[in-house]
Image (cartoon, rainbow, N blue to C red; front, side, top):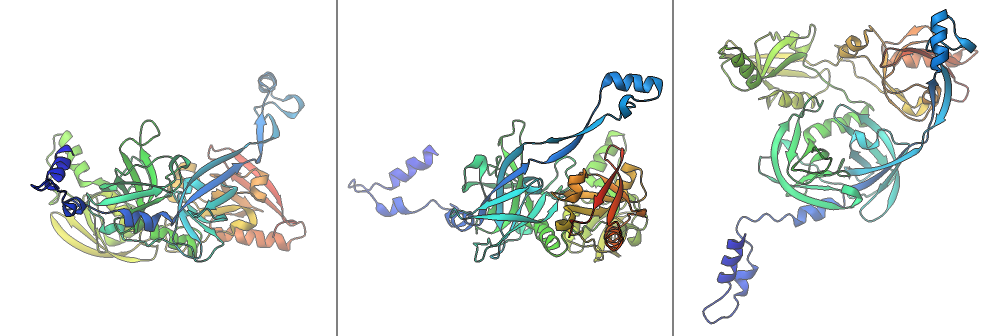
Length: 479
């Protein structure tokens, strides 16, 4: 830096000792001007304040003395014992948190992170011009950590959405948000990596940047030098909780699809290929550690270890040992790129799969399916009526819970079910003696209960720990 300044100073002086104004005014060659990008994007990024908590919760307390003797003699004192304990209600304190969001349409749609608003009872959105609006949740997606909220307003400064696929390593980007409650903060950096995988995170296709991202930046904008949105800032990599070199953003290639699904269906339509495997490089390295030499005919792509019966991969004829190199028109060099390519499709979409087998390239067509193994569009049960979002159990959930059917409580907020004690992660098994397999079963049970004389829902469920519970919901005051 000192050498550059010295050269500029020497170039600004002529022999007569007169300052050369043109030499001083001329910017260094190759300098990227980010001022226009900052000015155009900062007004599209909002400050989101969330209030959560203050709920009444039912907890179980027990007396160790009575539990011991109740278990010892085979009966409980006062109806307790056997570990059942007493149930009582407590009031949890309210909590406040904050984050960022990006205005994506003039009529008030704002995208942010799921973890920013998922527990919100109240959402306040503050614009860069200090106007404030109440926000409401349109849809949440825990898998991609994205959320769509809405404010009632018109002619808002919506950001221009760019294509994250066009980003190049080393390209300049800006992170715009509200770190540490410092509103309208802009930091600059470059794209350090694409399709970055972080442990077991479900997205596994982050844009990595060295633009400073800190607490409060979550949900903010990552923009290119044109001021176009290319990602939603989601997390930082740090052992201290503060910025220490790298931040990560969800690419717009994923954001666009999630937002469209949340708008139309209230839940993301997730398409699956039905393979388990790893990056080819990881497979080759693991085989080398065993003393084996591997020649797959390629050093990039996704090595197929197994396929799910009845899946798109099975339909395409994929087998153990194949290497997937392309989905549709998207080149696949690693698992994170495969997942990003699939995230842009819905169940029912037909795609061409390119793969290598015995060092030869093959192409096959298949229809992508959802987690239930079919092409049915998932629809969200009306969350405003009962405060709950229900989805069918995936095959993974069925294995984890040891169940063949049920509806997962994917999201819950203030409503009759929460008041009764239903919590996120529970699996509803039976409602009024009707098994719950699909969200339509819930809707049918509610309709039938509304037509009955007692207008009551008797719900049997199981918690994430495997404990069986039941609830009774009176429909008299529901919509």
